[in-house]
Every structure is written in C-alpha cells, then in structure tokens.
Image (cartoon, rainbow, N blue to C red):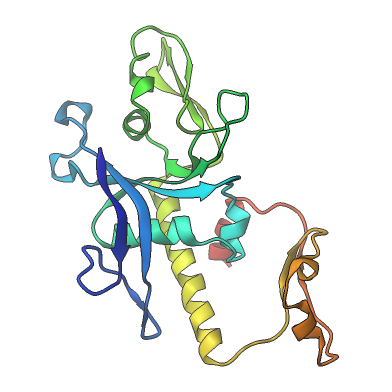
Length: 245
C-alpha cells in the first residue's frame, strides 16, 4: 500500500531524517514509497510488520539500473535514498526506477520496475501480488511488475524460479548502502578541497566531453583533459572485490 508520495527528507520538519556528511546534510525528495504489511502466518516477525518499504523513482523515457553506475559514483540515488530509509528504521524490500513514457513498447515487460530487490519469497510476492496466485496451481509465472518469476516444485514447493542479477541478500543491500554513502562523503571532501581537476569519467569508447556544453570552457586554458576510462563490465562483484582489499 502507498506510504506516501513526494516525501522530502533531511529538511526542516521532514518526517524522514538524513545523515550528515562532513557537516552537510543529504536532502532530497522521494517520488513514492510503498509499504507492505505481511501476515504473521508467513513467518515474518510481527515487530517488523509494516516496516518493509519499496522506493520508486519515476523516470521519463528510458530507465536502467547498473551496478557499474553505483560503483563509479555516477548514479547513487536509488541506493542512497533507500539507505536513508534504512537509517530511519525501515526494512528494504526494493528500490526501483519506474519508466514513464508517452507510449509503451509492444511487449509484455517494457513497463516493469527496474532496480534492486530483496531476494526473499515473501518479499517478492508482496512486491507483485499476482505471483502468489500461482502458489497452488504448479505453473510458472513471470512477474509483470519487476524481474523475477516463481513456480512450484515437488522438492521446494512454491519458490522463486528465476532471478535477475538484482535480487540481493540483506548483507548486499547493506553493503551497497554504505558504499553509496562513502562515495557521497568522498565527493563532498573533494569539493571542500576545491578539487576541480578535469578528469571526467568515460566508459568504453564513449566520448563524454564531446557531449558536454562546457567543453569549450575546460579547453580554453590549453591544458589537456585527462579522462578516466573504464573498460569492460562492472557487476556486483566489483563491490566485493573492493571490500576485500
């Protein structure tokens, strides 16, 4: 059920508090927050009832979530906003972009939510109520809401049949939260130091400076622009590698 829309955090009189980074408070507005209240018979601690939340950020046009964008600090919003809710005592069910378009593609899944979610059957069936209807018919069901599917087997019973790479354990969600906060803090530290070095991030063969309207300003001094080039694909393993070092 909806918990609220256009909910501000970190501002005066905001119902959701935010943490400070180097003396600066993270502020923002969450487009939509949904909560679910699991019944006690499904095995969820009664003290947690109503605390699981789904965060939704509406995006016009194309919406994509990639671990690489979080790892490189390009897109921290979904993870950081979910982290703010976690700091306020909410339990994470998922955090998603919702693509809003003038027209839909002629397929079954182009309208689905895109993002991360908790790898848990109870969570999944609350994020898409339609999946629970197939708990007894033995038929597989691909979610029309987000990237997951369920089915019923003789050994496991009703269970998750198909996951994408964005079904995460609680520890992984916690790790992403802390990483995003660390990236925000690092950015603030660099800004306070006055770091304006011209070293934009480029992934693969994308010429990021060629699309920037301020390219002429950066090149007016005659100093070269040193792009930070990242080749290959960065997945969830990039965070594990970083934490192990």
